Picture 1 (cartoon, rainbow, N blue to C red):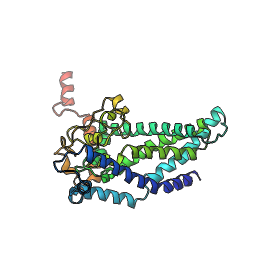
Picture 2 (picture 1 turned 180 degrees about the horizontal axis):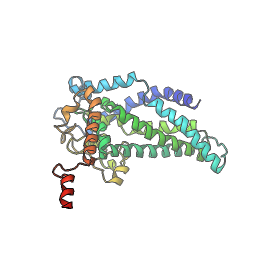
Picture 3 (picture 1 turned 30 degrees about the vertical axis):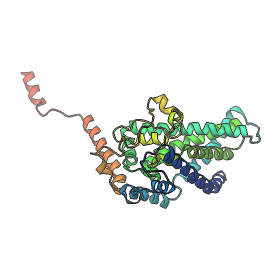
Picture 4 (picture 1 turned 180 degrees about the vertical axis):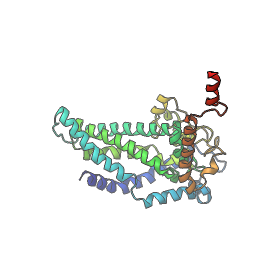
Length: 332
């Protein structure tokens, strides 16, 4: 019942969110074109349309690969939505019941605007931090980096590039984020005193709306929109572009708030477009030039890494040492 309620709500607002996403993305693109984009010719409506639809969008091989990833995700259905919703539906009521068993049942209260805002804020902070830390960990832990490198192999950013990710990384992200989200939903539902199903809807919608207001769709695009001094609070598309710098991707791991990068010392203001290149190091880029390689290469690299670790840990006896001769010489 809880799962069906959540899915019905998601499908209901899905169309509205799509329209809002398109509108906000268009606004962000227009702001960049008018105020931040450098070009010698006068800025016109025709020029804006050409800027939105550059030639590379139709001809770049990287875009075709990203489109393939989108198709693969569509073929698997709601691969991310259903598992996350199922985890929330299963875990949140259990957290709620356990808290009620320990501290006693809470009286049910009508949903107020203040309570809804508090829940949204709590879920937003927890979800955004989990996204940041998982991203940070994917760059720091070499085993996870083998799979995350698939995403960083993109050399021309489009909104489709956000879908270029290995399914193993997707499963890890869904598992960790879904568990954290379900836990905070259960806790907030108990503290606020209303059903987990309602509170989870507020939380999921809050995170989606937060990303819309952050121009999240432009983080993977050729529109390098900067927030100026506000970048110390919110991650701009231009800051995420800097994260895709092939020379140094150890900056700006955040998705919505930049406070986490400031806490972990990975914050950096955006730089001028064209001052760095996207993708992996030149010696690694050929290993990720097809969809098949992107799915298989991480497993191959992990296998090689495990083999090297086992080889270092396996004890060996030097061939020059002969225990029998040593024993005989000692007896003599």
